[in-house]
Length: 384
Image 1: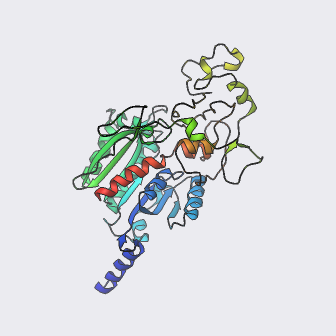
Image 2: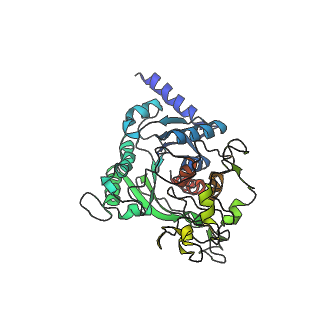
Image 3: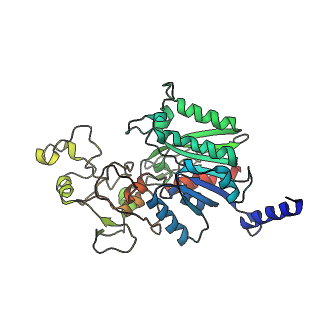
């Protein structure tokens, strides 16, 4: 390539990602899911050039919301292991080292405290290191990874607790990155949900990144510099939604505020007090409690309107604080602090259980609350 043609190519790349005289920061999203992390990173000022996700319903959700926002992001519906990072780099018209942020939340089931915790024996655990494979080619200025807390103690191939985390840090260090990490409770940043996750931020060269301090806490609690806002409650988050539509019944198109509770589950939750769960309601008939045991604290559980929600999970759907029904996907989105304009696509399944594709409840439960992603991504902007 001649010098003139090379310079012309570089000028086109800069022009494509420039607003006025300020260059737009670029990002690549891996394991994008339903788009919570993508949304937060975008709101922090990044232009996500591509999002990689294998689940077809999640991809439909991503395409729908990108179209509404008139963004140019490319959705790549594929198994990430089949993607050649070098070919993707070239198709995005980038050079090595030009990408500002590589981010993603690889599948966490291999490390989850409620799963079987097979760690690297589970292919979903190995997917974590796809972040490294892409980082080797793209050499982004920063890398952001989200994982469950159990990841910190996950055993490596030799059975060493914490070995997987150490291996990840070693791989990042070998690529010239320095890393900082923190367990963050989403409720501390105004999300109406107690959700603890590990966030890992790596930057090339010396790491000047700092995790922002909490903005919310118990009523009356102060930080070093100011009084924290009180935690956002379930009641506050769900205020104004109104009654849900029924499946196959009346509902606004795309609202996801749909009630799919089976009649049998309505009967079983009836009589369970707000903020409590069925297994310890010994005043209720044994035929209603059935085979639940003392450890079943999340099954047939009502939320409390005066507290932040428990962590939303893929295995069960929590119940409304006063009505005999599951939370709707839209209510779960409120508890994850998604904006109401954000639309979910795909089926709304009424019961828990193993499924091949992600329904709407699971798309939310798997995702990063957008405000958390925005706050961390905004702090990354300050150092790159």
